[in-house]
Length: 395
Image (tube, helix red, strand yellow):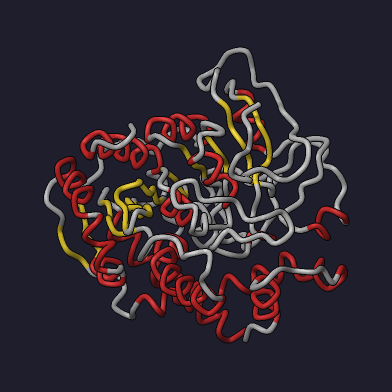
């Protein structure tokens, strides 16, 4: 067993599971975020009180079964932000994983352990989950490939919920080819095809730090070499702040509906930030949540129409590299809001988004995102592989 030198895995003995003797992923290893069930184990969901109040799972989550049946070997469960409600990757109970690409910075969350495990080469593939950016952001921060699939494209049976109307089962890999091969196993048939034209979405580029935009220039050029010159478009005339606020309000109600009864019954102890987010979710004004859902329908109609013919959007995954570990809570919250205005584009609209490790700022990774219409996940993964080759990235 490979030593966990970055603290990616949940503390304690690691339960290993052999995969099928043959299959498309035979010989590869995978890890799963500690919100997916593995038979016989307690799913801890990043919080000791959750682990204490839940019995061991009786069967594997659907994605665990799929990967095992494809021949991959399970090498452990990875850390998550408590109840998957956070973007930095901090967990005061289990320890925050080290970002292998930038040890002085956060790894990103909530799928922090899975991103760190792949970035440190402790496994080939790792399952995360993405509601508001929890695969895309740690992938960008740790310098690896990650995908948030179309909403509903991958089964979440056997996974703990956060916001069911937005939750997706995403995954990480160190190469574009491995990301695609995992998708061949996890995604339903279909979704292939030719993509294009390329759309350069202006708002996220303006939102990005100038150093980030500069660092992504070469990779952006590689995307253009594959799909042709990009057409500039605007998709958020209301502003990214409206995307963030609409997502925050609509998703908060879902988070409280999913987890509030357990929180009320258990009165769990939470780490910094998590308690406050759940308190805000409980207190969410129903009118604001309704307005968020209304905006979601309008944004979804707009983006689905724009991408319906196969167009692909390209923009920075995150506005900057991961926050420093020394960042204050206020600084972390500011990064969260600025970041989630961008991640809410795909999050609100149920779109597939692949982030590729496309550059560095001050020695820390930043990612470039490719976003397609709903259900075009396989085509998007194939495109990411072509872009990786063109950009000289691990393919």
